Amino acid sequence: MKNSRIMILSRLESTCKEMAAYFRERTYSVIWCTEYDDAIRMMSNEKHRPDLFIFDLSVPAGSEYDVMRSAKLHPEIRTVILAEDDRLESQLYAYSLQIDDYMVKPVPMELLEAHIGAILRRDVKTNISVKTEGALTVDYESNRIYLAGEPMTLTAKEFYLLDYFIHHRGVILSRDKILDSVWGYDYVGGYRSVDTLVKKLRAKLTKDYPYIKTVYGVGYCFDI
Image (cartoon, rainbow, N blue to C red; front, top):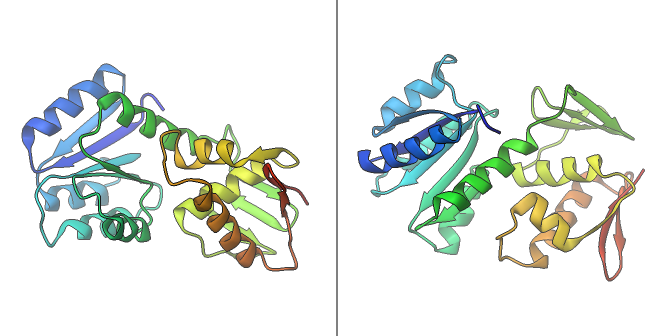
């Protein structure tokens, strides 16, 4: 959302300045740096801690993912990777670190802004810190979901999908709608991504809580 704080990390100062100018014009608060250690230090300082971290992987280095691990020590920081590496294994590894988005360069600034806006909007829970549906409780302060009082172990994408279902209880959701809302409108992975993640969520909900119903030929419906 506008006025959110964005941190940009790139080895290229020109990239940092270009992105910073773009987002400041759109009323975001922006800080940037070109050194990994500086980024880690700023994320550790509550005064400088961003709402969203853009990591431009412009120069390969072994310490790249140390920065991502440091970011995930603060689960409230949303993370977006920009990279020239379009290999599936690289993207899967990045997502295993619970990042929020991986975009292959070159990325138009307008598209990056759209992705960032979508990510930040997911975190806006209008004056709601806890939401309960059936045996599920979503704690937005800690970004955890509890099932029958026990914390669930969820990836970032699983959290977003389950939270999306909870907020649309009783609504029949097409796979297209789920893809647009949870993955982003330009995602090209197809319906299998939705079906695979739903299968994982059902396994974690267990047979005792069959909340996610299949609507054949359409998509899914979450209901208690």
